Image 1 (cartoon, helix red, strand yellow):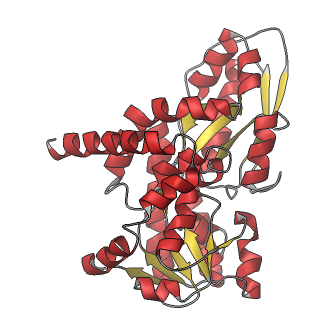
Image 2 (cartoon, one colour):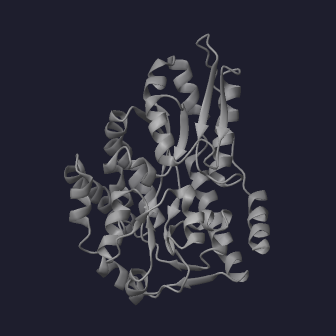
Length: 343
């Protein structure tokens, strides 16, 4: 896998993010914050967070200084999200699948085959979902600062997978998300929950034989060595979010709150960086010997058909406000789909 490592390193060199305009902010206090994520070092997610950190330090004349703990240094997503809610961690970037451990309804946005394109994803998140999910996120004592971008999930496995029957036969890791759990149940596979940072060892020991995975972490974290088959199912899209502890946010001056929002890097830059790197790494991974399978329309249809009855049990599994919010999410998606059709 030396070639894969070289490919990834080369891709990182080309990743850049723009700085935000300066906004002075000073409440007379010095703030030292901890920022948590499981993102691999050097990826667009880490670059995005570091650019935000640097801009915020400058825009507050050093009043807010953030120390970055990426790569799961502070623990799993589930553990660090709980600490963020409790206030022992201040800020961080998290996947929607991870966030659903505290706010189960968030998994509605990751429902398999909800979106047909990135254009639908961006339109729905930017125009509708911030209002839909903010109240629920705040109930968990979190402040939603900005949507992130994780990408579409595919299947990484230790043997070839082209059909639901192929996937059903393997021991597959499932995330903690209700969407993930019910996806695998619908495929007739019980799934095994393994924290993200423990997947490599689970693959090595045979506890699992595969998992849903986005392209960048698949390559960046060396999963291709352990699961050299990558099937482009494009089933669930995960946006993720940058979150703060809500009590901390509410304790800040209006100037510091404004400085935070004005220090955020352009969201579309992150999306473009993640999607561009994913496409680049996928092509280079193919050239390096990873078995990448592009499904036909018929094969995609077989997966869609296999899970078409998963949505009602998924909503029941989530509980809370999921039954009320699901029609809102679908309506938002449909409005975007219609508007994009006529562009």
